[in-house]
Length: 78
Image 1 (cartoon, rainbow, N blue to C red):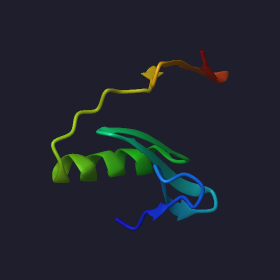
Image 2: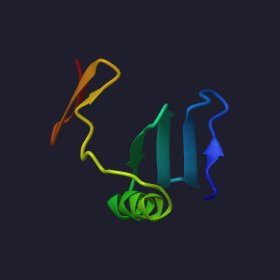
Image 3: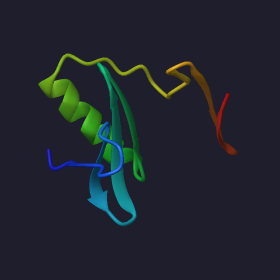
C-alpha cells in the first residue's frame, strides 16, 4: 500500500509526506491509525476492511494499559 516502516520503531508505518501523512501503529492484531486528514484515515480504513476482516472500534480510548482521553483541547494519556 506504499507505507514505509519507521527507521526508529519497527511497529510504526508512514504513508505520505509533509502535511499529508498517515501513521499506523501495529501491535499484534490491533492497529492505531492517525493522520493529518480525516478523509485519508477513512479511505485507509475502508481499504483495510475490503481486504481483511476488520472492525472499527472508534476513537482510541484505552491502549496497552494506558487510558487515552481526547477532546477539543487535545489528547491526554493517563
